[in-house]
Image (tube, rainbow, N blue to C red; front, side, top):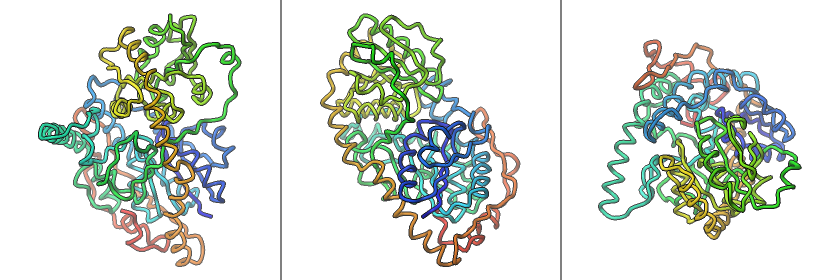
Length: 467
């Protein structure tokens, strides 16, 4: 039995994919605690997972990227927010380690502070990503704009130029990231994107053919297919009274001002043979004007709807997009930011649905996109087969057990018992976002000897630190 502490970003779309893997670990006899969104106890406690709430400073810190007017600006804003969270994440994961005394850590890819602390702690650790991973590859266009692959000299020229611009954008936060890494005795990174290669094991919740096959990624990245779990819920009575196929329309649960998609979708399908069910996520249902053949709910587990769905219309979140495709349901994607253009590109590349531009979103354009998407069931079925072959929850748990077991056994043999890790207590330097890039407060300190040798506190040596 291994005592595992998991740490998530404040987003259900990051918690729900890993939840079934954590539950599988519990079923195999492991002790699992997760630091995550408040009020997650009701959903996770029945799975045997203990919940520790994220502190309010993190739990209520939403990405501000929805205010940006371009994809590059939105990516820049998201990076700044993630970087600004680093000190609070370090304090939160440190407090959880002190309270729970874990033997192994599992850290969300979008929590760089928690990852820095995990790498410095000397405890065996791994990461997971529920999103398209932006690790560069020769086989795939640069991450961000949703570019389709293009071969030949022009394609190489395009990709090289875009990659150069994106590297500069990513590296705007590199001084702040390296500042905190060096503070904890970790080596500086050459580029911000190298952060994505640091985890000794990375579970990526997708799989080919939806995501592009690559041969030049780190061996530590293991794609296991999508996380399809959602909290249990009763099927509402009104759903059984509907006698038409469903068009399921989704907004993000992490606010990004995408309510216009839901309203346009209801208007576009008002006279159709479909009944539109909207899950409005972070937007209150009262915001919308629903026609007679539509209903708006703030949240419903999508598995209650997909068995009746003819099409899913979505902002392009990985969670709902992959759930739809795993059920063989084609998708019409209207990206609003984050990794959603990359999701849309993969939907179209697999002939599993359509991509409608947010800037050109109208009743006519969306209706055309929905009608075309409904002809793409064969592509959705191919993606579903690829997901099913990737191994899913059981493979994820297998990989984590195989990864943790040698290090945990070695530590127990050295100490004669479960080692106790005491994290360093020195106050963290602060990071705050500014107009152009995050700024460090106060002046940069020298790297600490204490955190750099934190592994000595529980019987490890410097080779154990998963850098």
